Image 1 (cartoon, one colour):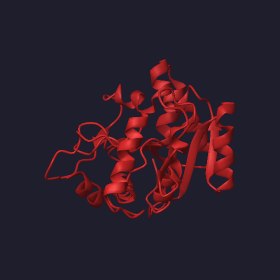
Image 2 (image 1 turned 60 degrees about the horizontal axis):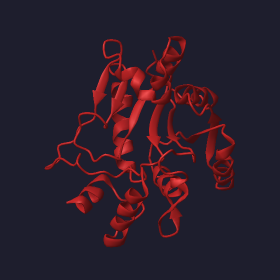
Image 3 (image 1 turned 45 degrees about the vertical axis):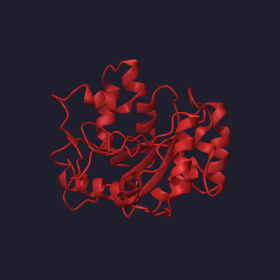
Image 4 (image 1 turned 90 degrees about the vertical axis):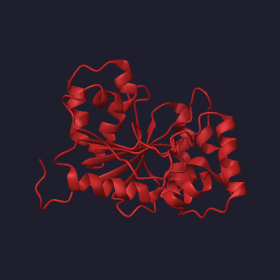
Amino acid sequence: MYLKDIKPLVGIFVQARLNSTRFPGKIMKKLYNNTTVLDFLLKRLSLCKRNDKLVIATTDNPKDDLLVKWLHKNNYKYFRGSESNCLKRFYDAAILFNIDFIVRITSDCPLVPPDLVDSMIQYYIKNFHYIDYLSNRQFTNYPEGVDIEIFKTSMLAEALKNNTVKNEEEHINYYFLNRPEKYRLRYFMHKFDKDYSRFKLSIDTPSDLKDIRNIFRSKKLALNFSTNDLLKVLD
């Protein structure tokens, strides 16, 4: 329980690695104006108003040495941990950076809007006594690929103390979602005129990257484009 006069530290953690199964090295591919997928995402997340710590949570696999070199060169904070146990990687990173609340974003979602991140952080901080896990991924009308999850570091500590199965270590949210009787789950909805969940904006394949590149070629989007700006492009 946090005291009311203590401001919790919020960490925006970007999960990233180069050894993707379907599309290796995708986050270092050029996306827009000679900017890579990862660089574009990090520049946008740097615009978030509540940005206590922006940390890239990558792996200790030597294949990610190139990524770490790039992060160091560009003055981004990073943490290296287990490749297979993402849950432990995030917990260890949170402890190192003294983070209370974790905002989890994956590096294959470069179009995540900073204003949406800010709105969800604000909602979570206001209601964290009543909710544990907040997400716009499940049961919402947002496009697939603007995925944001927020949860407490203490929840990761609980998970590590208990026996987790492999897919709960690999997919951090599975541990919480599999225990709705234990954790108070909340889904961040928006009153859109349309259901945008049919749109895919994450990058899993070369074809996905091509589709998002085409969005930038056909539409004029500034670096700080908002959620509404993005939805107008999809209309």
